[in-house]
Amino acid sequence: MNWDAVAAIAELAGAIGVIVSLVYLALQIRQNTAQIDTNSSLMRAESRRHWKTHATQVNLALAQDAKLAGIFTRGLASFQSLPPDEQIQFTFLFSEMVSTLDTAFDEQAEGLAKGGSFERAVNSMGDLIKTPGGREFWRVHGRRVGSAAFRNWVESELLRDDRPD
Image: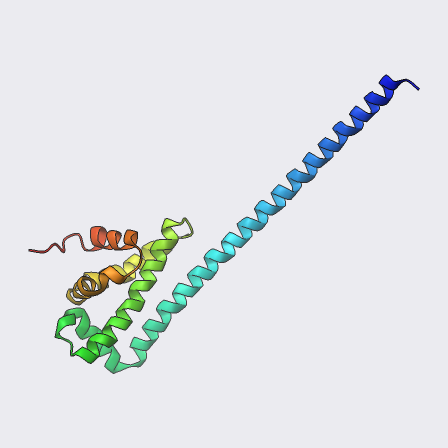
């Protein structure tokens, strides 16, 4: 047997092995990419479901409790005019609502928001933050809400005309 022929056969077998390995690797990468896309979609859906549930709970609390709805309405008009116990209730309720907007902001910043979810959150919460009571709440509690990027966004986009005199 000729050693050159053996070397050529071994080289051919090695090349075939490399090609088979590359094809297998390409298939694995494609499958992994599809799984990552599926997982990302599921995570986005779960996140949307979570913050929608969160917002629904706050809305239901207001709809089912006339006293709480009254506190909320008066708090939007003037946070400082509420008695201390009602300021606490308003603070916790409003904080939950702002938290929903903060979550939507984070999802938008991370590229997880789809289908206008951030815009919907801004449409539902933005006007509340702009109320006199929402502005007072923000001046008192805003520094403790969300990330610095979120706080800067609220102040530059929602409260840009809320400058101290």
